[in-house]
Image 1 (spheres, rainbow, N blue to C red):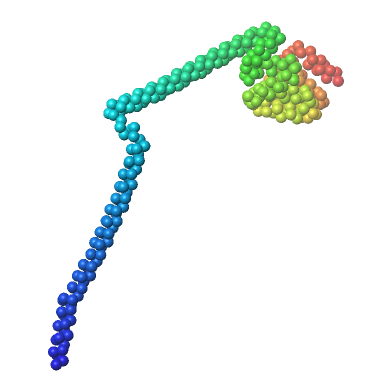
Image 2 (image 1 turned 180 degrees about the vertical axis):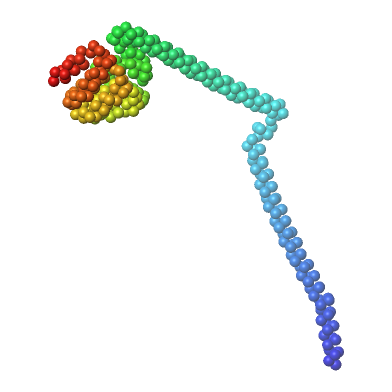
Amino acid sequence: MQRTNLIIYFWLALTAAIVIIPCAYLIYILWNKSSDFIERKAQVIKENKELKNIKSDLEEQKDEFIASNEYWTFIAPDDEKKEEEVEEAVEEENSADVESSILTVKENTDEKLAELIEDAEKKEQALEKERKRFDSLLLEADLFKNEWKFEQYEKKLIEAMAIDDESLKVLKPLSDLYFTLGNYKKALSLLKKVTEKDPTDHKAIWQIAEIYFVAWDTQTAELLIEKAINLKNDNPKYYLTMVEIYYNTERYDEALAFMEKIIKLRPTNPKYLLATAELYEQIWDIDNAKKYYFTVLEYEQNNEKAKSKLREFTRE
């Protein structure tokens, strides 16, 4: 009995597994598909309705547009052709205007460029003329200098300076002229310009030092002389100015040391030998004074001052 019941239950379960479950799954799939179809159909109906409404609105707008532009609706083919011709003519006219404007601008630019070139050439010619005039004035100045005509020499230099007041070609000779003439006020301003433009001009530095020494600014003068000597260490004039500075500030040993340097530079020059002898005499170094007086006579036998001093030392 129990076995029979088990067989029945098994059969029912097998039937459910083979028939009922697949059918239920099939019914579920068909239901989902039919639901999707119904929804799509409803969406299409809705979209068609909206399209009809839009089409109706467009038809109304078209009628209104045609009514408001009735003239243009009935343009004949010939009129359309004429309109195209008018448009082409306008385009051609605009193109011609643009080309004309471009040509006008080009012509104006060419004219301005030509004017600029002409102005530049005129300026260059004027500068060249001034350069030639400047060089001519310097040549004339040199001629007057060689003839010892210093007034005309100064005048020509001033004329040249009016053309170019920054050129060392005129600054150096004019400052040197004023220094030589003792016009230190004019000389100083020009000499400073010379040293600004040429810091290695030892002569101009020495001349400035001399002017400060005359004004009794010995400290500035000494510094400038040292600078001049560093630039040019074989010019006895520079050493001699230093000797004067040391002598006037009572630094006799230093003054004598620089006199000895001068003698080494110019051992046969009676003027420097005589100055050294006199300096030794002033500090009461008679032996060295005699030595240098005798040396003077070796190179200048008729030097009366050396002879007189030696006779005076002999009597003593």
